[in-house]
Length: 339
Ligand code: NAD
Ligand code: DAU
Image 1: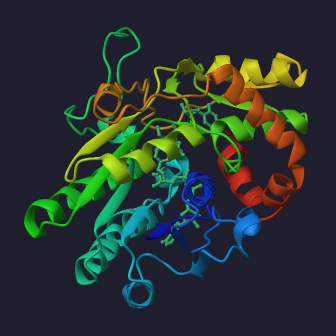
Image 2: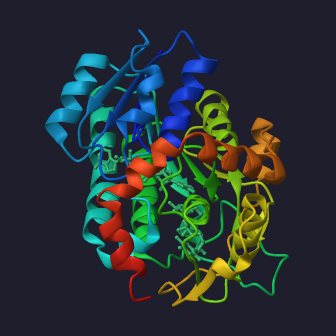
């Protein structure tokens, strides 16, 4: 069994590569990644020499490179994590989001058709459903909730999802889609809420909370997401969408205060800054379908997952300090300088 994992040098993709090599030692895992600012080859160092692992630097929009790799590897399964993934960046510059997230998906699916791939899995997001109001805690996203996007990022992901379902209906491509809530854990790029707050705390820098910090996200430990995708690949029904999330809703401000407490830093570091444009209020997944059909449930409690995550950032300072010392500083200054 050969599995191509696109975006495997990023946060969730790298965790998935480790998961697959560990749980399925007989599989061949091939990572295709462009190594954008969010991709980091050092993340994959522990598996680089493994005989059943191969890394290829390429853009999923590059039809020639993608076809060449498919011709060489003849994959059975393709799992597409490759994407521009940060909402704030999509608000600043949407173009690359449409390019990678939509056209890149098309390029991969065309190659899957050409080379008769047995399963194409699209890693999508709960953001395609838009948001829920804070005063209706009884509402959750199900797989039939209408798509109703807020940001250029989520619009690009929703467009890709529609294209994936269209390729299934029109060409019979064997696809599955997972729509997951917010992940956290090791190798999370420090532009995102949890790693940004950990890194800023450790540098005694201000902790920029958007608006009032009342927005709610449904946090899932990254390994639980990887297990869900693995289950969908093996037991999921072709043509189906599976929501992935764990009834772990938390307000941003509560997460930031928790990180301060755990790192022994004062809450006076918290700085309320101008809100994100079009900021989604609440995400909340109903995971009934994946639970009843595939038996999936999140295994990591938030208290344990956040402790493991903080410990990982404490023990792997080189990984994130290298990232935030380079190009990232320009990004940070642009996004937060006059906010
Ligand atoms: P990330 O930004 O950490 O990693 C993205 C990876 O894709 C990087 O390695 C990057 O180099 C690569 N990439 C970007 N453009 C590429 C291109 N054109 N060709 C090849 N590789 C390219 O993202 P992440 O947080 O790991 O998210 C992975 C996927 O999961 C995305 O599709 C995202 O939409 C989805 N998702 C993320 C979350 C989350 O909480 N992070 C939740 C649900 C779904
Ligand atoms: O729900 C899944 C999505 O989760 C994924 O599809 C995206 O790829 C992923 O980036 C994430 O999107 P969010 O916008 O929810 O994540 P982010 O970490 O950017 O922000 C989480 C919340 O924290 C959000 O309400 C905005 C807020 N925030 C974020 C940053 C970076 C702050 O208050 N301050 C910050 O500096």
